[in-house]
Length: 193
Image (cartoon, rainbow, N blue to C red):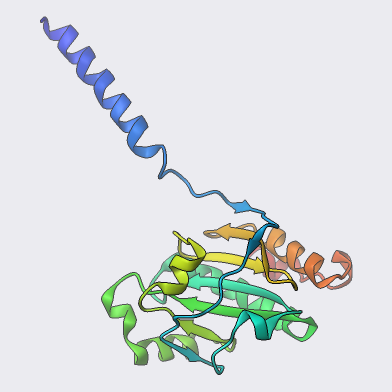
């Protein structure tokens, strides 16, 4: 075999391998909607902060935002101000925000460090500690951060993975709360941080 043919064969092989390798793991979908999925409960939480243990049965009739995060994830830290703005704006109108802290690394299981992060980031909403990834697995989650919206009937109706699309998430919350979008919209200053 000549050198040019060998080089061409190697290049084609590498390109094909790269295409196959990145295919299923490329960028996460920004959002998906589903009205057929009953939301998993929070069974298996290793503990709770800012609340007694919560169940979806007890939250029936409320719109619930579930956010999977971990305290050392920079993307999660970037999303927290937006989650806080949603909490501050809509919690009195029927939105229940629940954080699910699912550690990626062993040091993120440290309870004192998690409590410090809750104080540092001003997280006042309930946070389920998911050290064993039970809630994470029940949701079939694969990303930090991830937001799930659950309607008043306990169905997952919206998912968003990663940063961004803050206005779309807020719009869905407002729709689920049954309000006109323009009547209680957050200022763009908050949604475009």
